[in-house]
Length: 495
Image 1: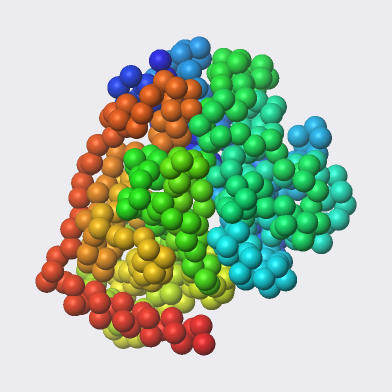
Image 2: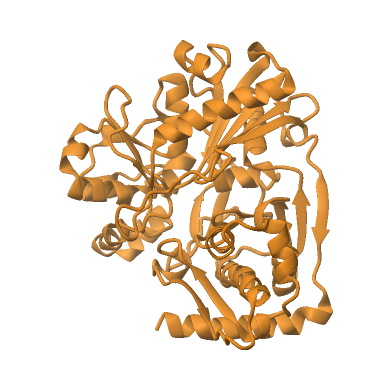
C-alpha cells in the first residue's frame, strides 16, 4: 500500500511514493530535469504556466510508479504541496485565463499597501495578522484593475496547489490554511475575510469550496488518472503550502518547533499557539496545517526570496554551468569567514517582505579586484544568504518564536558546509538534517487525511536524522563581525 505526494515548486514538480506501513520513500522523481522557466514580461513580474505544473506532475507520477514497480491501484491517497501565495484564475470550464502570478512577483505591492492603509493598520493586523502586502488577494486586485476582461471571465481564483488538485479531481477546493496564505482569512471571525473581499470588490463566489487540510477533497477523474498513470477514484486527502508542508514533513507541529528550507527562496517557519503578528509585516502568520479551534496552531513564516536562486545564478551565469554545486562549495572553502571584507546583499528575486516589500536587487559591496577572487565571490554570496535569514530570525524572536533547534531536509543550500556552519554559528542553534522533502511530507499528509495514520507517531515512522550541525564557539566572533559588516551595508541600501 502506497501514498503519493506531489510538491509543486517554482523550479520543478517532485513526486514521492511512500510505503505506508514502514514510512519509507520507495521512489522519488522530479520534472523537468532542468529548472522550470519563470517568465518576467516586465520588471518585477514573475509568471509560470499552470499547464507546465500539470505536465511535469504527470511525468513525475509515472516515473515513481515505474521505479517502484508499483501498480496504480496500490496508491491509496494523494497529497499536494505547492508554492505559496500564487494566483491562478479559471473560468467555469476550468480553463486557465492567464499565466499564474507566482510568489516572487512584485507587481501587487501597491494594491496591498493601499488596502492596508485604507482598511486601517489596526483592523488589518488584528483580523488578518498581516498586511495584504504582495499576497494572493492583492494579486487578484491587480488583475481586476489591469486586466478587466480576464477578471470578468473568472469563475474562481486558486492557489497553485488548488489548481493541481482541481485538474486531478474536477473539484475546485481550497483550505482555511490556504486562504490564510493568500491573506484572505479573518482570524478573529474564523472565516474568509469578507471585509477585504468587499474592499477590493471581489464577489464571494470567487472563493472555492473550503475543506479541511486533512480530508477527502475529491477523487481522480478517469482522464486525469490516465494522464497520471493512476487509478480512477483515488482520493486527494491533503494539501498545503510548501512551507507549512515542509514543517509537517519534519514533524514540526507544536509550539517551539522550527523548520527551515533553503531552495530557490529561504524560509524559517516556527509554530506558535498564539495569534501574534509583526506590526511591520516583515514576518507573516498563517494557520498551520494542524490548526483547530481547540488546539490553535499558527505558523510564523520568514521568507527571503533571494536564496538558492543566487547560488544558481552564480553557477549558471558566472561559471556558465561548468561546475557542480558541490564543486562551488569546495571552491568557496578557500576563502575565510567574512570573505575578506566582500559583502553580498542577496535580494535579487523580487520585493522582500522582511525589508517591508523593498526590492533592492542583489549586490556585492567592497569588491577589491586585486584581492578578491572566485572563492570570495561564492563565499560572500552564501554568507549573505544566511545573514539575510538571520536578520529575519531576529524579527521572529520579537514575535515570540524561540529558536533552539532547526530542522531541515538534507537538500539544497543545507548541502553547503559554509551555509550550515554560518547559520549554526550565528543562531547558536543545533541544526538537524532529515531524510525528507516536501513531496514525502505531502505523502505523509495524505496518509493522515485518509486516516491510514491515526496519529503523528504512526505518520512519522521512517523519519530519521541523518546529520547534525553545531556551532563552533571558536568561530563565533568572526561570524558576528562579518554579520555586522553586512548589517552596515544593508542599512546604507535601505536609507
